[in-house]
Amino acid sequence: QVQLVESGGGLVQAGGSLRLSCVASGRTFSNYAMGWFRQAPGKEREFVARVWGSAMITSYADSVRGRFTISRDNAKNTVFLQMNSLKADDTAVYYCAADRWRHGSSPREYDYWGQGTQVTVSP
Image (cartoon, rainbow, N blue to C red; front, side):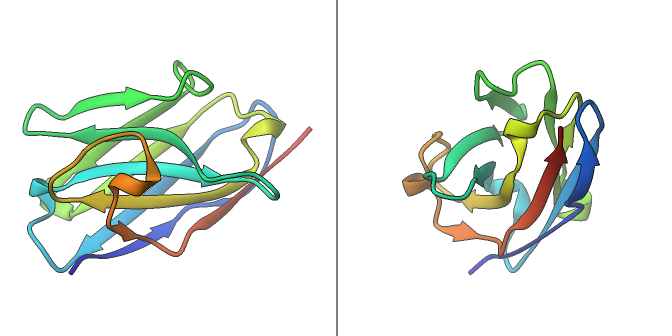
């Protein structure tokens, strides 16, 4: 079992930055692929970014590539999402997710989820 706790959300003006953190506990963190997803009101949960493997391979949704950066610190069991040049369309609840065996971009491929942290970007 893996427990995930996100933090770092908040209210920011368009063009601003936020850094989300997700602390994991319960298993060997480095063995898990980690992903960030988001869900806006009335919309399905969507992929944002993921990191996996010993080489820390990363992948991003087209909508955030070049503005967001995912990283992880295995010594601290933490994954980060640095969000720059934020837009009103980035407003959503952001979720951290983990999976031991898969590392895809579909929410269905992740077995463990945090409770989410709200990000609100004012125009």
